[in-house]
Length: 95
Image 1 (cartoon, rainbow, N blue to C red):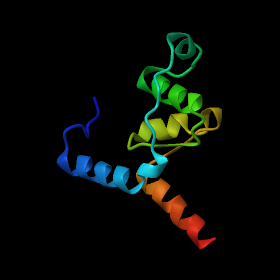
Image 2 (cartoon, rainbow, N blue to C red; image 1 turned 90 degrees about the vertical axis):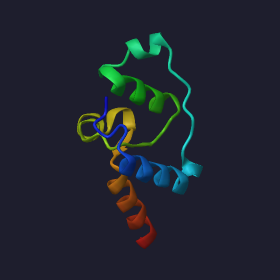
Image 3 (tube, one colour; image 1 turned 180 degrees about the vertical axis):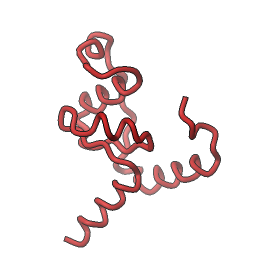
Image 4 (cartoon, one colour; image 1 turned 30 degrees about the horizontal axis):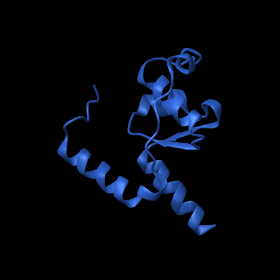
């Protein structure tokens, strides 16, 4: 269970983020057990990465610092914190 679960401030920030970026967000279909068994990561990260790969996602935005560190770059999926995602968007606008 996430330490942020139930935190009203975090929940509010996540909702603001979702509303701002809703055009780039999608509902991801669940992966099959066969597809999951091929993944070499564990736990919930397995589901998240597999779903991202299945949908050809280029980025995952998460507040889970461990997931950002250990999963970044796996199968070409960039894993970012909301802060880093926002910074990358600002950089692209300046270029």
